Image (cartoon, rainbow, N blue to C red):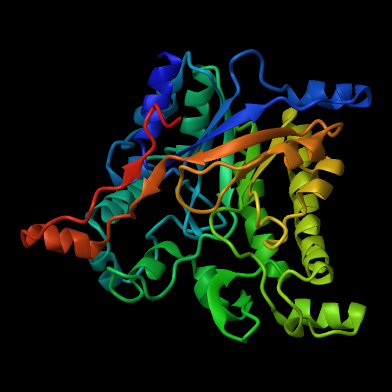
Length: 392
């Protein structure tokens, strides 16, 4: 497959995001680290992120062989790393001992109210698990057979609300949000106003441990690294009691009286997430020691909002907590921005900097209401817009 063919495959696939590597200078004392990292050689400097949903939703990934072949579409291209998403909502798409499969445990009424593709996904994942098929391991094997690395993408906070336009109330949340989410409303984000949001807060040890449990589990497979995707979906911190009380004890101020971007408040919140990333690094390094080879850590953040999200990427690079920084813009694709500040931050750290581009430029996911309208003969919603080869 040529480079143009690769771009064409990516540009029209709504479940895919592309990351392109930039050169980053490494200081001489980073040589050993660079050898461990094994940065991309020659033209192989593209990372592709697959959400791990569309192939099950559409019914294509219906066997171990289909899963192994799935990433091999990009054999002999400039693709370096194939990132495979394992979290759909706060449930997963692989046989897990710490989380439910997508749709598992949802009430029968909720299952009847989701889309046809969602029900197909549940049927496929349940059957494959019963047959002893490890979906993640199959994808990793396919990547390696095609000469690519396989990283596992863990979405930072993909929680679904109880009310969602075009969906029956609670259907999406029951189908995609894990039991942990339902059992612990006290762990959800709280806004400055006191309003509770749908997302879970990393201010709570239990939330961080839930994510780390999934991370440790997927590292037992034959994968090459972990990707933490903060684009899916912010925020990860709000004004929860542990944060408010901790800040008050340290600064004698109520953070709810300060601007959201007050540097003291941002720095305090960033420390929480830096501690989390230290735990991520320790878990990845422990797995690497067991496997006898280096495993990488990648994160994706917004070019403007990363500190507001609690992501102190400069510290993460300096402490060598991450090997790859993927910088994008939260939202639909077709954007441009200056990467120079991030490249400068990375100098001398050995961390590679990637530009992230979303394939979708307009539109939204289909809903059960769209399916009902189609059956009733009503006009379909406008098709999603995608970047063309020329756009790339």
